[in-house]
Image (tube, rainbow, N blue to C red; front, side, top):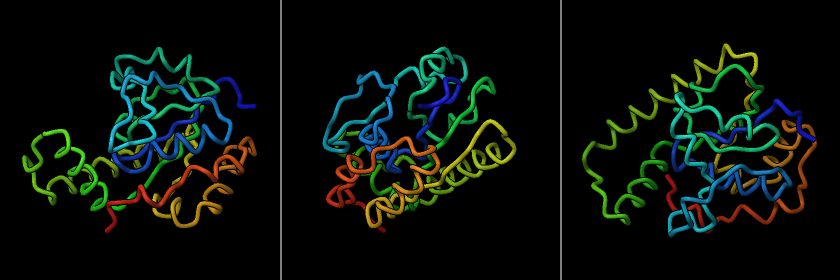
Amino acid sequence: MMPMNEIVIVSGLPRSGTSMMMQILEAGGLEILTDNIRTTDLDNQKGYYELEIVKQLPEETSFLKEAQGKVVKIISELVTYLPDDYHYKIVFMRRTISEVLASQKIMLERRGNPVNAISDEEMAALFQASLNNVLRFLEGKKNFDVLFVDYKTVIEDPETVFSQLNTFLEDRLSLEKMRQVPDSKYYRNRS
């Protein structure tokens, strides 16, 4: 059982595999906090697992009280706004920035949004700067434990990742059900 003031956070850049990790942890038996406002689509056929109010950080933190003992998805940029009132276990998804950009571009095109407003090089630099900022923030935080997980490794060697996750989360996961989640057919934007 998870300690009450502990919150598991799944984080990373957009399109880095955070939704897949939410599915894995849910299959593993952890309780997920989501509002299901953002529904499935071609870009996330198994769901986004988002909680809309998270986007209002730092002004809105009331959802954290309900998140205690559960898992919530928070994109990397917003992690720096989490208050020190809780203990956080962050599963931080990493994916090659070129793959993140390719995946994001396809999603934007599918939705009819402009994709060339900023060059890939500029966007990659912005993403990297954002990641660097988050990593600096996490270095000095005693109430944040972080496990970095590589998206590609989840697909190619899930057993290793599941073992790391289970150790990180103090043997609270059901590994058998987790094995059913990663699916290489969804790894479409490879670098």
